[in-house]
Image 1 (cartoon, rainbow, N blue to C red):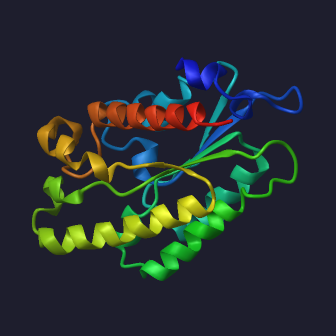
Image 2: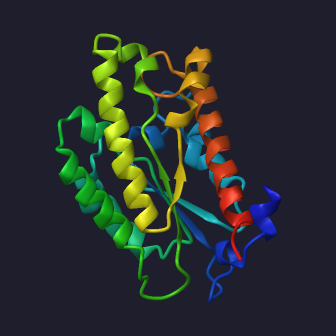
Length: 219
């Protein structure tokens, strides 16, 4: 377990009752673990969960193919019922691929994060938001104009960053590791799109490192 997550900040591990803390993962196939050798054990939320306090329960509500509209309809209600201490979401890829307008996506992401701003009871959950990686390095997207693709991803990531900041969420900047992705083709699964087992391991490392930095800066 990372030292900072274990002891660096009471807001991450303390609860107001005897119920164990809950980590909820929202999202789509990249939170389900599609592309990994074993989705049940290799998905990045599972790997992150393994480094949280030992009593923490994982509730992975991600649905393959989900856009934020489906997250709102199908994943958010049980997430709210769980009264989580951590919530992660990796939004954007499916919305972008299905031509959801950016203003619609932005409004829906804001609505999702707003739902956790004022919990009915208990401590404020820690919100973890992953942005869109540099998709120019994905073999499945080689037929797309790389310059246009990159411009689009940057525009969407700007919106993700702004909304995450409005809700004091921890932003995990996957896009910033684009060159590392280019240098490690093994991070991409055989389908040319989803992460591999090694890719999910690296994503989990980045999430945990970003969380630890966030914890270490808390008063």
